[in-house]
Image (cartoon, rainbow, N blue to C red; front, side):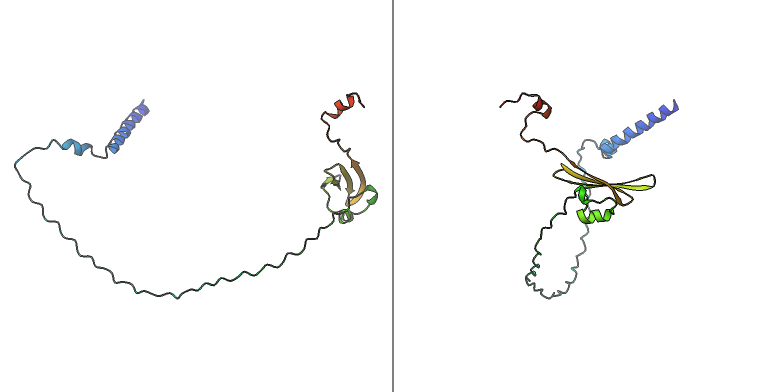
Length: 180
């Protein structure tokens, strides 16, 4: 109950302050001004306003001449010609026969370049790695498995080339009768 009364009083004070602010504080001045009353009494003449003191102009600053700056257009030196680009041949694609079991992994990467995909894992205290060399958008791949930095196995995978121009899926295509 007391809290409600306190909130009510604070609300009234807030609303009163807002209204006073909206009227710009003219609430009491406008109430005291009434309609003009005509009388024969003339107001006393106002005292003449004092004349402002004459302004003193500051002394002009001496003009300091700055030396003229001459800008000459200087041609930029020509950049040296770019060295000719010699296309490097990609490293050979590894065949399983070219990868010897027990060869060091550095020897494989030196001969065939960096693999397309590589993975390194640890299992039972042994480091195992897999290098995948792929070309033709992954249709041909040679996988080299390493164990402790040496080649353990290598094998190749060749995916069949998809037939171009087929308008129906392969399984449906093979079910249709062959017309010659």
